[in-house]
Length: 208
Image 1 (tube, rainbow, N blue to C red):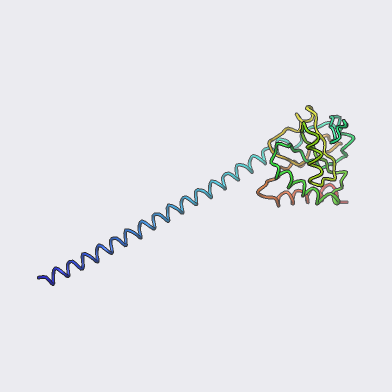
Image 2 (cartoon, rainbow, N blue to C red):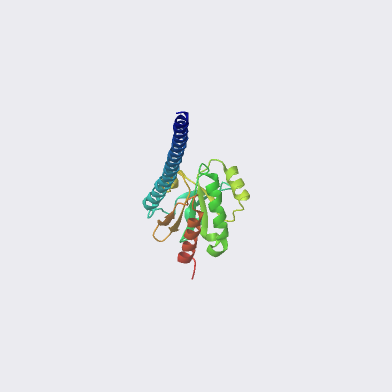
């Protein structure tokens, strides 16, 4: 009788151990699956965020492209000398419109890329337009970033045309059509797109 009890006890023990192990494995699988779903959602949220940002960039490019801009607007250089736009730009000038309130790393990155193209595009064909109340800051910015091309502060009239979209953007200005063309909003997450843009602008406007 005792032998039978021992067998039953042994089988019960084995069953309990197996049940505990099975429960543990199932719980672990459920935990891993939940973690997988959480990571998948996080990746999906990141991708959706990037898509929304990209949509915003492309929307701004479409809205700004073709904007009329007369060359008789006034600008002020870093030494506070007032000039007409027609004095500082020529036909098909590549312009960076930025603000000191924009992402500093973003602006610095674009300026570095423009420096790479200063010889192939030409110093006379690259201009930076900004809105600043501090000309000392503009001079320091030019010195720190070793900027060889002109930086000019916009008046309110020009600022109302080249609207601040909360991020820097590039475009080519045609003095003949008096329009801004090839608007491009650089993406911090995809710097290679800025390289491709600048190369395409070089090939389109500055190569004989």
